[in-house]
Image 1: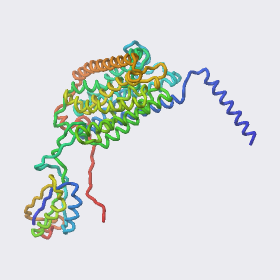
Image 2 (image 1 turned 30 degrees about the horizontal axis):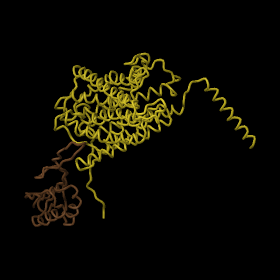
Image 3 (image 1 turned 135 degrees about the vertical axis):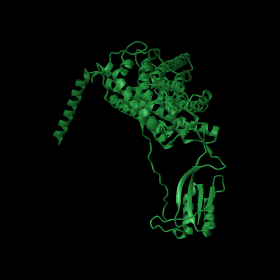
Image 4 (image 1 turned 180 degrees about the horizontal axis):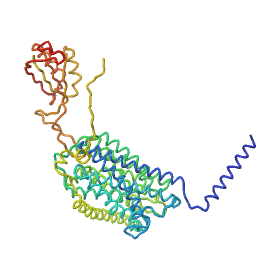
Length: 444
Length: 112
């Protein structure tokens, strides 16, 4: 027995030495980081089907299949766009404005290529899922009136000319917002302001639905399931954006949960005070608003900062949805602007208020409400410039894309189609062939 | 023969069904219907937007009974389906000229 014990120790010592010499000259691949980011990529992918259910349940029952399919097809279209040229335009050097074409078709990236401590493929596919969901998020605004062919044309144009440049500005070392130091941890600007501003533009360019075609949400339990999947996936979205399986990832994970939980509660309190009834849809919407709002700040703020950001999200997005939309009269069907654009804007601004060296490390910045210094004020200014640039660029390019779509395949469906619903007119199928029988009762 | 057509709250369905069974009413036809009366529906609020729900779900029960049983049946329905609030529904009574059992071709009162 003793012999076996010695041999075991010898073998393990040999293995440790062998493995360290084997890996010594290779670069710093971290397997734990790789495992976590691959997992996060899968989590973020799941957010898009989750979004399908979230949006689908909010639709009219005549448009639900259309809504599910528009979002789902973003996975298909943007995934392919991303490996063909999207990744290259976003992340391959280039200038301050846009990446180059050196990685078109993922040219030159091998299984050994590294991006930090993870394989470049891991980084690429993780980023791919962000591009997918950003395009899908836009489509909540267009319920019940956008041609399906127009969607198929809009999505790749949006991904290429809106998402890819903004992603490059913020997350590529050569992008101007990255170099200048605008803070956006997981996509408050890149994902949420971008999708919300795109949604606003599309909603205005499409025009409103007829009043009698606007119906209450068809399936709240489905909205609940969608919210759950989004919240679950958001841990990969924010927790993975540290690009490492480290303490900062755990921090982002925690503040994400805190902000969502706070905002859900604050939203129903606002409702209760204003209309007299707390609604379930309000709680779900509040949770999503909290998640969108904490996104840009998630790797920079502490848990109490997250709590305050959650409150700002609940109050800010509640009033954006219930007051701002009626005030301007744009028909943003499922409130992409109120929840995502306003949430992303508030969160990006708040990142400049609550960011702290405690989370960011010694190279970081203490925000205005943390350090009360000039440093925080400068950071807040940078955040504002980032917000304005993202809004302005997205709206301007989306107007051009919408015009291109309008004069090629046409943007809007006919009035007759809208009355019948887009499910049957665009896809020839309907969501439910249910027969409900609730006529039996318990025997005595 | 009379047809008693009662439209009432859907949550009262089981109670009405039991009451009619106890009276010995042999058959009934139940339909899920939507409609409104003087009350003109209710308002629901989603994300701060008010929707007028002016067609509410109700249950319609149709039974055909002997003339002498009409009072008993309508009283039973009124008693069980009543909550005292607006929206309890209505009962309509009308004459039935004939009844035919499809299986045998029998006609008249004995069919119901």
